[in-house]
Image (tube, rainbow, N blue to C red):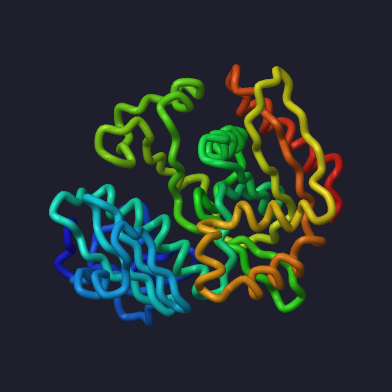
Length: 310
């Protein structure tokens, strides 16, 4: 991993982040003389991992401690919602380490800070935030990109931070101005990948800077759209009702398997209970036989503009 000559202060997820490593995806703070919320540094975690982990174990999770070991990449430690320590392995690439820092590590930081991390993309539409969630490959980022092409703004891609106001209004906090898209999506949108950086060496998923269409304002979360792949030929959208709404929020919580061993199940349920009736939730079944992101974006906008009443 390329280390910076000095710590650099970044801003993401409404947190100030001091990092010994270059994180070009994030916005830099103009001053280095400010209090920081999160500290990222390099350290040797091999002895601690050997003490805590069983053979072939990937994660060690306790209250205020999440450690994980990614073969050929690094051992990572996240503690107290503040500290991230990286112990790089010899084969580690810069891109791989950064991928985990901005993904799993930041998801763990948010959870330890009792900020609900949803797995998906969040878009600003008419002064409100709308989340697009789904399994890997469901089309979250591609649908978000289709909405950006219509002039809307990105709030977050991959990890969506949600907090509650004193009145229990769920708010989405901006992450950082980048999307991740596969080559197939770029081709459908007519975008050239020649000047784009692959997320990881030799892969066909690319980092898409969206600084000109990134909002730095926290917005109320008004709706969630769950994308589900289907073998059918037509798009179908249905409201998610009753207890299924809780299931949807839990299922699409980023790294939800962190919750129980971290002692956060009660907090998670209370947070979801406070916000669930303030949202509209829909499931969109999309065919895998054709490119549907433009159709889905039109369907999402139709629901937002014609049916959602907050």
